[in-house]
Length: 309
Image (cartoon, rainbow, N blue to C red; front, side, top):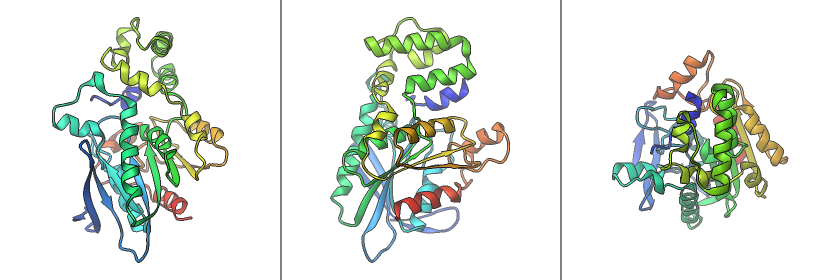
């Protein structure tokens, strides 16, 4: 069940990189709970801006969590910068809440993540430096980004986004990893969807259904990625990697079927955090905590080409 837990990790000036490159950057506070970094290349005219939305859990602006440092979003932002695209990436609200010891699991709602992204969009709509605004959503951030993009973005990129509702996706994973829990999980999700609460879940499913988390899961279940992506009347790019052990390529295919005019690309050897994997799942898992392993250039080029059209 380790892959299921990877998805559900919601327990809740100038800077120099290891490559000795420098980037024009500015730290911004958008709301009392949302802090991030704007990177904007020097340009004679207006630039496109990509707002990068991170995956599940207490994910920071660099794509990292405690004990898991891979800098996936940092390297993505830097790669887009080098291709003339401004980026804003931000700490999810739970990062600041945890630092301030003000996070309570029972009060977390999926809608809060959407509200944060909308606040960021409205902030940058007022910034005259930028010609267009795109959302890039990673993992859970794909759903957040596609819902938010309906509020006036110019384009949307899904990277490793789910095509199923979260309950169906978890049940599918359990089918592969813990088939003995599938029936109980399906019944518990159905109870949660119908009644807003589930009681009769197995102890083996407590990490998903304990009462403190149920309100968050319930709020997440209200959004179907296939429905939300179909609402977009802006350019859409869907990207998945065939070495992703968290989100299967079939999830991207579901999104593409729901949005037939979207561009769709499967990147060979790319895993969930954009790293190139030549070997087995052990190599894949280890990559989640290698701080200086670059992201795949094909990802950066594909996203850059889409935004600069």
